[in-house]
Image (tube, rainbow, N blue to C red):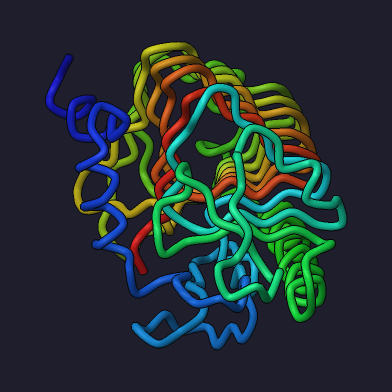
Length: 280
């Protein structure tokens, strides 16, 4: 295992998850379920908003995972960030072994798989959770539409590799494919902390097992957007980076991980996956 993999495989120890939770403790820790977005993430905010050239995620930025039809995990996963589901009810949060809110408000639940202080929310929890989730889902859809409407930076960022990204290093920009995209090797994104990548994929997005998206030069996951029209499938033991804006389903293989957000307009499926929302 190389240095990159050993750093980004927090399932290896619970300590890694807890350290990451402390790192982002200023984000999403409130009980608002993504409400009250201001476009700024502060220690007192109820959610974090990721900003970039793909637009403001708004209330959707309050979640590490947000889906409409279901969020499942078999076996246990580790999520550092809030989990939201709407319009589906809590019965479609499967595999989480939720515990009711200790204050008996029924506005959220907790799980050993969702690192404190983060929570799980669904459309049938008590108010104001349903309204907050509706707002978040609308923000998620708006961000998807915004990213989909962006124009490719140049001919050089259009149909790169004919949809097969083999051993590439990609500079910042808007990339576009009118086809499926496959990542069979490690993929490096090289740019500064203020640079933005938008990847527009008209078909499916698949990344092979035991590979990595590697950030270089100071690149940050909150500035990377994957707008995908079809299913996203990330292989087992693979590490991914960025915010996935999926029009359909997102599935992560066994022991895969992501530093980013999973925002799916259908369902999210995890398999002993580690999901860590980005720092602001």
